[in-house]
Image (cartoon, rainbow, N blue to C red; front, side, top):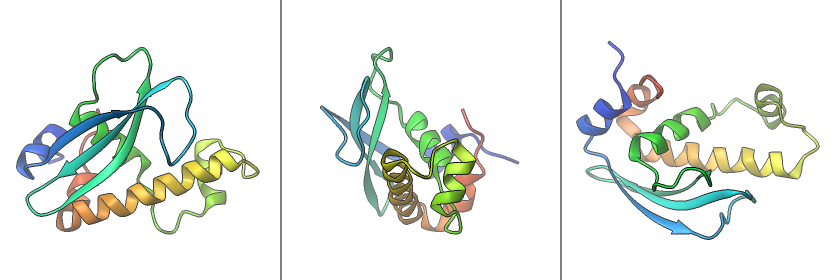
Length: 127
């Protein structure tokens, strides 16, 4: 039975703190609200950058941040060229390369945070 992200969060006792920041250090993204989020389970914690459109006034919720991380998760065998093809980026774009590298960093952080439960996380229903 596939779990929801909310159930996964509860089962794994995941908490999040959020700080608003003026811009992301890992990539340029205009016209958005930017945040530094610290995700913590019982034994580990990681910090990630998260952005959402100006129209969204509330701070991000934990399930939205985890859903974005799940979507951004990159298999180790996905090359930059394949990433661009899959998500509609140009392979001749510095911005696309920065996005790819940010996704790889977040993938490593997700692996660290959910070490033993990574497959359960990736199998959760998306929002």
